Image (cartoon, helix red, strand yellow):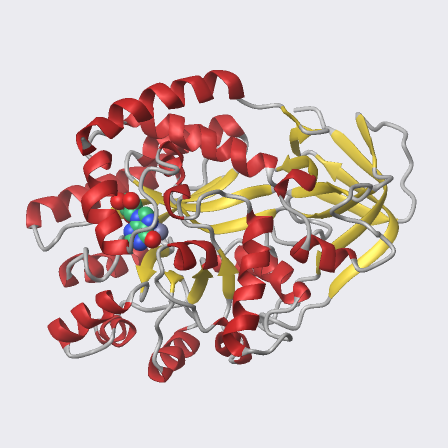
Length: 446
Ligand SMILES: O=c1[nH]cnc2c1ncn2[C@@H]1O[C@H](CO)[C@@H](O)[C@H]1O
Ligand SMILES: [Zn+2]
């Protein structure tokens, strides 16, 4: 294969520098002007103030642009792009039982491919190039990731409700997904186990997942402590809170990515800390479903790795992580009545380097450093949202910008969007198919 060189010239660079010591919150965020970055195939080869243009295949002018690591969404259900706006203003239980699960019963692989495809376009357009997904028909989602050029950690959502037959099937599905897709598509795809939650997955399923995750050396993606109701349910069954129960059965380790973590006791926070559990904070979904406010400021104080997630668009209702960063920060400030809670700097770390750590990808992505994969975005600084640019661009990124400020998106060295033009998929055609598909799926609700 011939070597491909891409050069980004004269750009304003903002990135965390990975401290590599499991201190999750004190990495510096650097901001340097007039930097050039050389990409060799899929990797960052050089970062300096001047790089020669000879032998370069593609030069990108970085004037009026800011270069940063692309954002990492650690909790999504990408095919749910079929269901945006399907059922609003409901709490989780009603939303799932009366609306989402009935329409999901009509899904098939092709529909999940379509939903994931639209999610991927939405993410590329808003500057995200890596996501952690849990859903069904994940073989088709993997194909959409392969075709769309993104990076993803995929998990088959495992639900058995204590039924042995269902449990066997879920393990078969999950193991097939691992065998077929883990480390595939030039290493862009990884597979995790995805027990849905301690309510929907039995003790046998959870202990089986721990055993097999060790065997295959893959991580675990699970919903935890999202609503008070769910915690009462576990307390009634086991006389323990959810993290205490999972600790008791030997499920917890540093490879567990726990989404939500809204309601946590002090003892549960200690367990999360001790086991180095990775948290995915989903402020938009937690607000919309009126689930509650995750105690992120407390977790940060204890040096717990917190990353950022959107959840599916049926509960968010979009995948724009710039909007999510703003929600993430503002919600912590109003919760603690402390304006210093979750600063703009911390929020960018949450959405980049800590996202990489949460997925075990810190050696590959999450910062712009030599040797890492070229996953990065250019943000237009000559824009109203990013002005006045003489003020802090880090502040603008979190408190002012949204995904539409992203101009160019690069993943694994490939330019997936340039000057706002998508280089993958056919947006118009997909949206037409989406309307047809959703109107059919919705019929079960009438
Ligand atoms: O916030 C959430 N909490 C719990 N389940 C969810 C949430 N969002 C989506 N799903 C559901 O999780 C399964 C994924 O395999 C799907 O049934 C999806 O609708
Ligand atoms: Zn979820």
